Image (cartoon, rainbow, N blue to C red; front, side):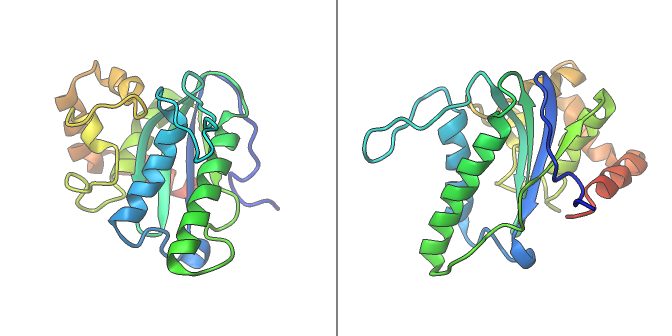
Length: 206
């Protein structure tokens, strides 16, 4: 039987939760530079500002096709929340490019060889509005001290940062674009423990 959320069939105008961890649960981020490199790889392909490689060839961009709504990078795993507006292959292409480039960087830096991630990334389609509400909170609460954790999109939700490649708007619209309502939603997570437990079951492979 296939592992949960490995087989992926994408449809446009839909939300997806993408996640993966290090092979054998090993660390995939060992210092600040590692986190920054991974985020810059996402930015490379999601920003409206085209970047090019050393030969001057532009990197493929998914701006207008794929929006990164939320993220959290932890020591041995990551979570990403996407909205796919067009081109059903965008998620697969982006993750292949980011994972491949990051593995090359990581292996060179730490003088290792072989796979870095535990197989193909997992992907869960967000099937209803309640799920969309809670998955962003689940992602941000991966860090115990989530308010101070520098490698998640939570500061973007609080209005501390803005960019053209992290776009919390579609989630914040569910809270009437009221930042304080979202912050209270984070604080009140214990009132919705059942929903969080359901998400953890959905992500059993983590």
